[in-house]
Length: 301
Image 1 (cartoon, helix red, strand yellow):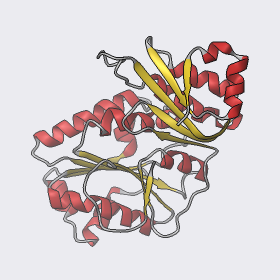
Image 2 (cartoon, rainbow, N blue to C red):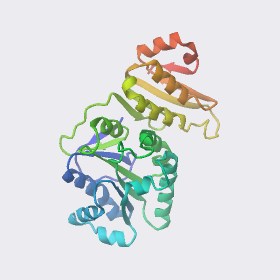
Image 3 (cartoon, rainbow, N blue to C red):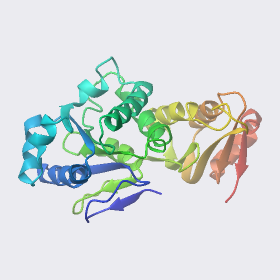
Image 4 (tube, rainbow, N blue to C red):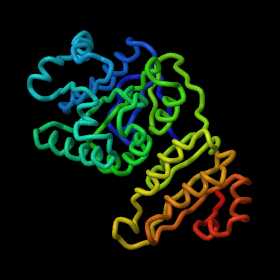
């Protein structure tokens, strides 16, 4: 399950190399930035900062004010500060497939240039502002755990969520997808209607809360990620492709949500959907619609 880190020294890259940080003022933003990037200066990692609301000169000044040679790092090609939209949207609408390729390319380029990995910070307040393709951000966040971070151990990235520029509902949903959450003080979020967490080391997601008409956009993102899930079967190796839905913390799911998720998870030939601890309402739906029941396996743990 995701863990929340409130305070403490900057830690090394590890299993939780995809972080989120939520803040409500510039001081907290700066503290998250400095804590996360300081190890890159110490270890010789390349740094990329994708800004949306913070002027690039502010990023450099904050780092310099905390004793980090940002100007020198920028001059020698170790640090770049660019607009998030230039990074994510330079070739058209936001596209998770293109972003996955971009991360792999950026890490290769950093290592070829002699850097000990790549450390990136992205301001995410462009979400929900009518940016083309932004509705695919949840799909992207769910996919990159397996498609990017599990394969690139020298990469660490932190997503910054500014509560002044995003709704709490959006922040809570996207923050919850990350394996580690950074907080300063009592920065608490109300729980989203539907909680979504990618499963560690296997294809699928865990859902909590409710699937109803108010979270159709969330279901769309989850379904898109499930449809792209890479399993042993879909990678062309031996073995059946299994996608797992952990519903042990789900209280309710309606018919529309069930059909969308089951259809997406079993879209690829040879895939098998395993549903863990479904709520009673889903079991009733499976009794009423046997064609859904035939597409999955229900297990209890």
